[in-house]
Image 1: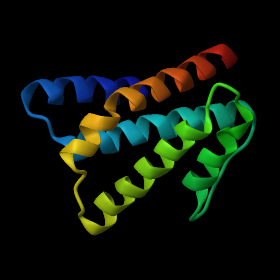
Image 2: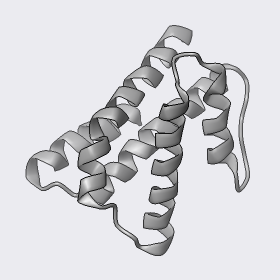
Image 3: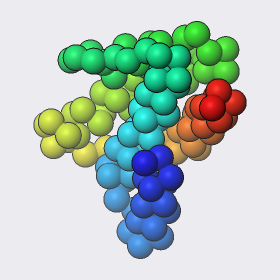
Length: 116
């Protein structure tokens, strides 16, 4: 799913920058990589706070810094507001955070690949 979402983002960015949809998909990529890490360890988070707990669980990885978790939590909150309240991501948010989000995705990808 991570690869499919990344391919989708690349194709959409070329046509028209749908910032909210792209940012939501970046969050989903990060979440899926976090789930993969947790499952590799035999841990599964369920329930209403599962995503928040999943992100907090990443404290055990030295490669993921507090600032990374802050960005992921902010992305999660914004994604929830978008999904449940119809509030779009600001274009400036996407522009300002895209490179850092991509860096975080790379960190998680390396963590998953090193454990498989």
